[in-house]
Image (spheres, rainbow, N blue to C red):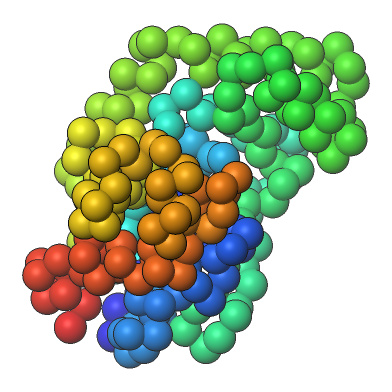
Length: 239
């Protein structure tokens, strides 16, 4: 029996609209119930959050990590003087959700004005920050988000993740349409969809939640699990 972690953004998250028991990580846990699972994935987060999750996974004795690439302009950092701590919520005896305390972490997942307003509202109300400090944090995160040096570092960090950490196995995943070869493109091609970025075509093929939500449908989750995630090498590791 192994302890397994899922680390990623919304495409790896259990608590994402339309996911829950439809999600590929949950279905993987049902398929291999002899293992225990911790899902750290949270929507909108960046690779720096992954580093916090990897540390917590190591401290919790995790053996195997599934980690999915996210957009490298998503940034954040730790804040406040509280304990570094992930809250755990056990859904079953072998599947647990883990989330970093919200008042310990601020993040920015876009460079648009609307994104900045979203961050301002969240930080000022939830973190109880002054408006001046709020604006300074927004400026820092926006500058970091658009920094080419920072983005290139995130790419190189993810590309070398298997060599950086000494888990028994690290299984990198390309779930979203970021790199040239990824699960989304493969799934679209397998269902006769020429362009996976056209949500109407993906929805009409039953692969995404809705026309306004391109997260995986139950059919999409099943396909990604069976045809992308469960490779011969991964099956050998899990069995």
